[in-house]
Image (cartoon, rainbow over all chains, first blue to last red):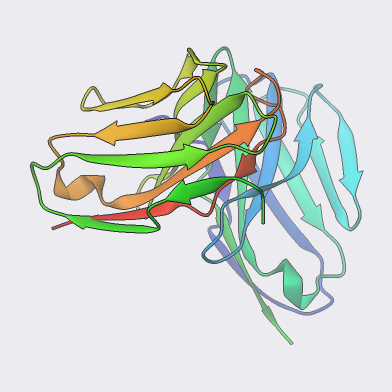
Length: 109
Length: 114
């Protein structure tokens, strides 16, 4: 099935560092979503973006909907241990919802 | 706890068999979504039901089918199982019909096909 290109696939950082990840696609999407999945649990929606160029924050998380509508970025500032997990982007087009492969975030205390 | 329940938590079966996964949405939610998560394919949207009717379809195989009952619980039927069907199957629910409405995910059913 169609996938978004999400990078990096994994990140190993120190507590307190900032994190950046992104998703790109060859297709245009109307909405971009970012989810976090903790081990053994289902994904939880973090941020939803509805307009090209939109920049939205949720606490230490900031996400942007790319101007071309083909990409999105998620930044996490001042990482803490509970940020560990897998982050997924998802793009919504006409009756389709496509997920990235995920970015696995590991934090060294 | 998201309020979405899925049963069973684990399922081990053999190739060629048929299984049924069950999902109960959060109280008041009308939409149910099914997802498949495997190591090599990531998270794949399979299908959405809204108030008993099929609303959107993703990468769902013809061997798979789903339905939503009048009490809003949903079942995902997987038949003629293959080794590659081994995965985590998640159900999610939301209040409304839009694919981008806030979805609450259940804990998942881990299916192993031997």
